[in-house]
Amino acid sequence: MPVDDLLLRATERMDKSVETIRAEFNTVRTGRASTGLLDRIAVDYYDQRTPLQQLATISAPEPRMLTVQPFDPSSLKTIEKAIMESDLGLTPSNDGRLIRLPIPQLTEERRRELVKLAHHMAEEGRVAVRNVRRDLNHHLKELSGSGEIGSDDERRAEERAQKVTDEHIKTIDELLKVKEAEIMEV
Image (cartoon, rainbow, N blue to C red):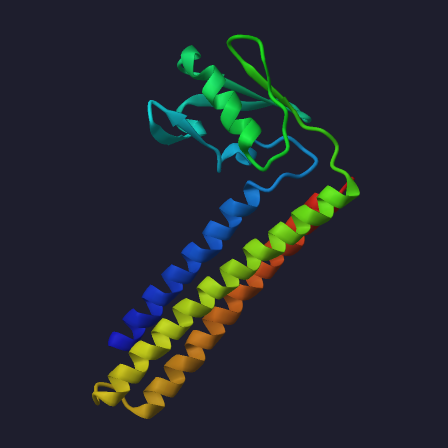
């Protein structure tokens, strides 16, 4: 039945939206060092925007310290520059072969900014999930209009789509609550 296929595809797309939000939340700084902080950083490497993870080994040897060890020592300066230009507010120090990133304590004001950023990311995720539902409802109306499914089937499918949407939005809200607590934790 095409309705079940449509619902399955919509659920998969919503799952991807939730996973994207989960990954984006990992890039938001908390009080602890996390290698995920540097996931969004791209470096100009031989005139190519390259993700930092592809150019270096990133580790967290201490709770408040990240280290970045480039595979190619000549890229050290460009990696350092990319980190400084990012919105993370970290000051790298380099010893010629390794970049150290001390993670300073977050101020109350910075914590509030990060919570706002997390809320913004969560809202983008909710919008993405609702857009999937909207697309699904549009396809259901087309199927109903062409006579492939009845109006009762359309209504039931829309109700199922709403339940799936609500579940995914609830998951995003739960992720946001956890991230907010993590950010505000002193």
